Image (cartoon, rainbow, N blue to C red; front, side, top):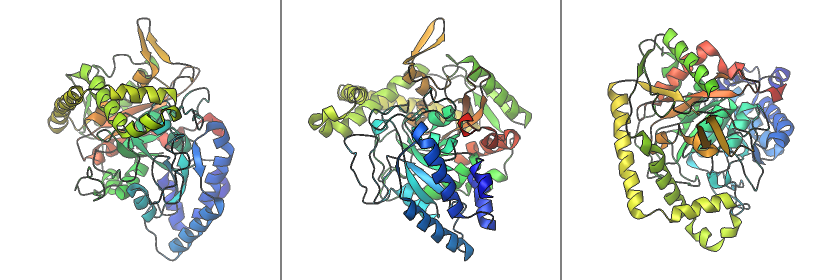
Length: 480
């Protein structure tokens, strides 16, 4: 069985079933994950820190003993996981992808890390990211850039870059990430895995280094919707240490989605804005995806949205201003220790006026009101492409969409995700196939649901996977 594991990619659901029956052990999984990290990390640069092997094997043996004695905590028990190097984990270096915090050792776990450990999961290391999570490309000037496992000449997306790469290649079956403008969903889309950004306030951000507190979300990257549901059951819930976390009951997500169907589910598709500059390969896969939802009984409606021209500017003003405030002390004392790109962004943030910041907050209230009205009255979920393009090459600073349209790479990657950080609505990116051109790169669809209704979008994703089996079918060529 261990030999088969080494040659395959497995979901948490598949692994947990085998652990529970004794077919495989947590020690087997640690061995497989470490072997893959040793083989692929030198090429793809997904990890910044990997925990000492002796410590990992000790923890896996403890988990194995607990399970044999009948103390099986959850489907995460004995499952290796990683964290974006922005989460604190006691005794582990937390660099936030920066030079400034290169020697920073965490003194306590982030709440999300603590909760997932309590479910029995084993932390294996920290993943690479854009410096201070300030980017969407996965390019890091201090720790090297994460590379896309489908084509190493292309970016992985970011800022949870290493997390998506690690899950896509089976270095781990699960990673925790953060999402401020698309930082979980974009790399998940570009690398062919599942990325969930829950409702704002659903998962604690305590002991997670902030980028823009009004927009930051803690999420997860997995191989399937069921896996994301299982993770959500353990990391969600009110935390007195995080003033933004909400007193909301945490549903039994896995049980809910297992009983769900697509019959009668109302799906809203908005072509305005989200389809304006869509890459043809993305468009064809997306409509095929919609066709599958229809064939399973979903009802699809066209949506007409307003204020779309305000999405980017309102998000940008808040993102830049809040990041600048967080970094103001270091900007004044250690400006030379930032990369040029991040320093420039932070300086732009210092120029956002209080009037513009408040105006952006008010604009977002209007935008959120419209989305809530649609999701509470017209449809159960909104479905759009996660990104309008496939993963760009590292040397592509601008993207030619067509003869008349050229976009900055950053703007193209963020275009379809940022508004759901602004509004705080739950959103998940799921893989829907590979483009049919010579590069054959992954494409993702994004599902958006009502506030604190993650089960709605997880159910749609789960039922689609039952038809498509994307978690098993999408295997990057680097794995051979």
